[in-house]
Length: 201
Image (cartoon, rainbow, N blue to C red; front, side):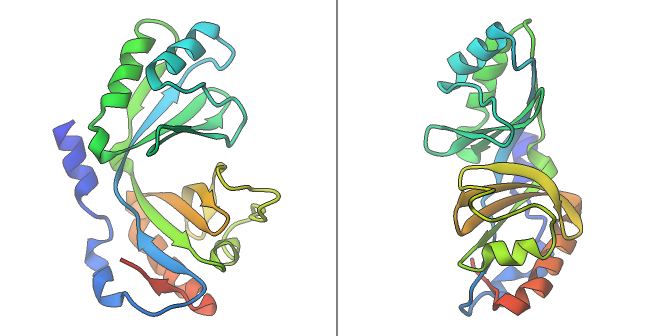
């Protein structure tokens, strides 16, 4: 866990010197989000023992609707991504405790948990024009009636595949592969000029 955490703490955007770009005010604010732990959970959604193990470990029911992001306490999420796939996201301060409880609860029963914490970088996009900016690079409908706050979807945006979590009507967290983080950020800044995007720290 220590080596994995060290990897997460190394910013994939460090070479862009975002601090020197910060400032200004516009319809969109761009920021590198706080690093987080991430785990892929796989298991049979219809299996009662699997669902009970997840709920016992996390204190929240297994989200069953595609795109549903269930809150776990104040700072963690469990997102339904596919028929047998979820993403567990937790703050670094959790230090793997949620995942450890879940792995223990799953035991030898159905289900598997894989640590993917170092695979992504979080990019935060917020502001009254945030959805407009993101819509220039994706085919999904970002109208709040179709993609409401609290929902998540895995889709292509610009030049990268991303997990998009709509935190609020005007705030998104994008989980982008680290290998694409720099080029995605540059794409976001370029497209953002149309919307008066500014870099926030």
